[in-house]
Every structure is written in structure tokens, then in C-alpha cells.
Image 1: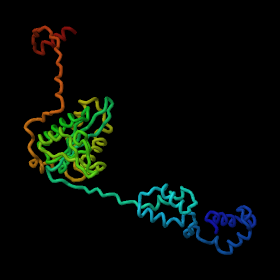
Image 2: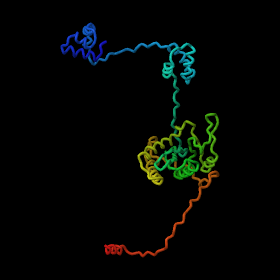
Image 3: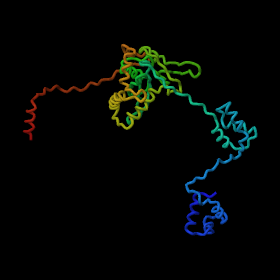
Length: 342
């Protein structure tokens, strides 16, 4: 069959008056072929017409007679490896290569449907979600503790030097004071300060940190943990972590911890007044619906039975200068002195 490019050249050469034999020599085809194309009308077809080709017939392979066996084994055992299948069909007489089998298995292996993540909304004052996020600054590594109320999406944020139990206690107490009350439960990731072991995948239960249980009882909330490898169930705080990275930290300059705290405080106020992407409401306004439903704050901070007390800061005595009586004068007197000096 004559191609589009060759057809255009033939038309061009014929229009310029070149002989058919010369054209045949130039295109390296026989004169008989050229005459046949002209007689069949191939040169008169529309240049924009695209030839349609049917599917190529399948090429027989050494794997063909084993495909039913491969399908049967994969239907029964979807995770069966290509190496194992290769050994099995070799024992049944397969003489082909492993690569051919591996490529075929990759296209036909059944894939289970991913488990859907169902978004759930919690009622007002029912739940808050808690997580740490690591950030690196020019003066060192800092850990952001984020607490988000599940209903209103009201966010609390602060940066700390460490990610430990003392930081968690201090931060949660500050966050609860910020909210003005306590939700019924707090949802955590697999924090060692909260959960020492998670045996639910083995049919067991959560093993909670005893010190954190005392802290939770003091503040009257229930500590919950999302299942291992299912952190997306804690999405109400996971998404704000990305929001803090992209909208607050990225592209900003910070002079140190003090400046970081000041800028984050101002940013947090704006963040809680923006229209939230999921609720389509401002968190600060939506929070009004759950403020009165929060449990009351504890009367005092939690006193840990495990953590040692922080050392008292050492105050150095400043050298005292001798007391000198300074005479106060009106500004006009100082102006006259300056004018006289000049």
C-alpha cells in the first residue's frame, strides 16, 4: 500500500513532468509498481484521508497454553509471585523465559479495590485531633503541636524544642485554655506518650500510657488512637499540617523562636477566620456553636507523678550602680544648652 508521504512525492514528480521510470528509480520502486498505483487510482485519493488498519493478529507465544493455569492460580491466590508461577508452569512443561511471564502476570493479576476512606463529621464538642509535625529552621529543629476541634475546625498551634511527654502535657493544657473548655475525646496518632502498644490488629486492645491516662482523667477527656497505618482517619489535623507548611512556614523568614511564636500567633488568628475548605464556614464562627458544649476546664494544671519538676531558673545578681540624683529640667532649657554649645 502506498503511504501518504510517498503519494505526495509521486504527485509532485508527475506534476513537474518527470518520467515514470525516473520517478521509479528515485523512489527505489519498480516501474510496474508505479504503473499499478496509477492504474488503481491510489494517487487520486484525498491526501487527508487516513488509512484504517485492523488489529494485528495475535502472535503465538510459548506462554499461550499456560494462561488458563495462570489465571486459575491468581484467582485462588491473587498475591502469588511471578517467581512461584514461573516454577509451577516450568514443572508443567513451559520452556519460555521469565520476563514474558512477569509482564503477562503484571497485566492480569487481580487488584483488590482500595478500602474507601469515609469522611465522618463529629458533633460539636465531641472530639479534637492532635498531632506533632517536624520543621527545620536555620537555628534548629522545632516541633509544632497542632490541636483541631473536629466540629468547628478551630485550630491551635505552637512550636516547641522537643517532642516529649512534658511538651504534650504543656501544649494540651495551653490548647484547652485557648478553646475555653474540654472536648469529650482527643484522637491521637500512635504517639508513645499516649499509646505504648496497639494490639488491635492482632485481636487485642490498646495499651495506654498510665501517666497519660492520669492526665486525661484530670482533664476529663477520653484518649483515642487511630489504627496503625490508618492515619488518614485523623485527617482533620493532617490537612492543617500541610496548611501550616504551605501557607505559614514556606516562603517566610524567622529570626528565632520569639519571632516564630509572634508570627504564628498572628497567622493563627487569620487562619481561624478564613472560610474552611470542607465546612465552607469560618472556624471562629462555627466554634460559637460548640463553645458552650465543651466540658469545663480543670481547676488547676496537672501535677505529674512521673516527670521531674523543672529546675528553678538561676537569677544572677546584677551589679548595682551608685544612686545619683538627676535634676529634671524643662525641654526649653536643654534646647538652650544645645544652642549655646553650637
